[in-house]
Amino acid sequence: MIKLPNFLEDAELNSLRQAMGAYELGDITLRNDARQITLQELDELIGDGIDIQSLDQVTPFSDNTLVYKNRRVILYIRDVAEYDSRGKRDDSLPRFHVANCRTLIEMRTRKRLMRYVVAARVDGRFQINRIDKSKKPKGSFETLRVCQNCLECLGFDGFNFDSSPSRRKEIVSMFTLSRFFDRYPLTVIADDGQESELTARVNDYTGDFGLHAGRAKERSGFKCEMCRIDLSSPNLRRYLHAHHINAIKYDNSDDNLKALCIECHSQQAGHSHMLALPDYKAFCSIRLKIRSNNN
Image (cartoon, rainbow, N blue to C red; front, side, top):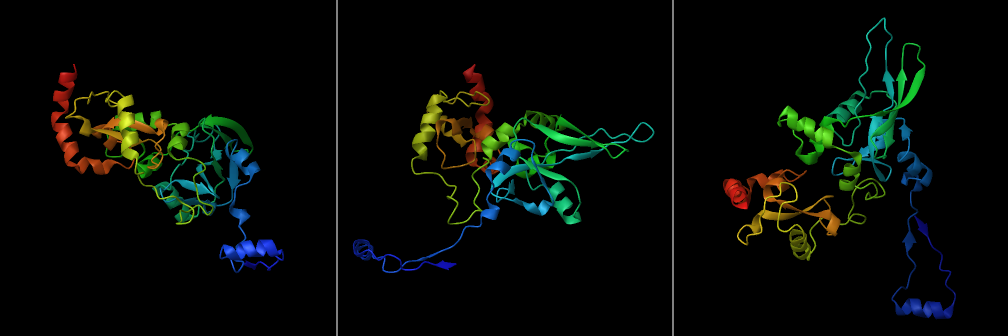
């Protein structure tokens, strides 16, 4: 903490300061720039990634996504062991992580010494070092798949291990990092990687949300933008919702609001509580009849 000296000697400025009620100069706290990401590091994040020494350098955010300094990131292991033809050969590639899933929790607990990399590129290709028996790494860019434990941790696209194998496979195949960072933006992180009452806006609906929601429904023709069920009849419009795609409830921009029926809305990440709503049960009981009338 640094105490500023009273250096305002100019009479006019002092008079103005006193008129404002600012009789004393306050204190300032120096900012900890060590926890701010640099422009060079940001370029590395969206490029080949940054090698980190320990998982302790990556912290879980309040929504269970991963934070490096003040940026949301993905994490993977760069070095992949291989064996020659005289022994067992392992061609499996590591999965990349987008959340503080049970796999990462176990790795932290065991304090596994690996070469971890944090990145923020969106094309799904990662720099990998294949290491054979000669211990000479062979670098290559590979397409990696997302960790399913991470998808379950976030409930991404409704992923759940209780779902059928075909449904889980479908969600994994549809996952892209561009969609992930659309939903969980790279830059909306407080300086210390944690939300605080001073730095984070409360994630709540705005007073004019109803107006924006109505416009989103009108743009869709009062049809669900996923299953296309027609809910334009006045007595059915209660079952059509406006969904915030990036989960930020105060972001009512047109490209962030999507009209969804209550069933499709319940399948979005973090919306499983809707399954217990009376409207959900009522909608499911008449859904087939509505579709029949639509046809």
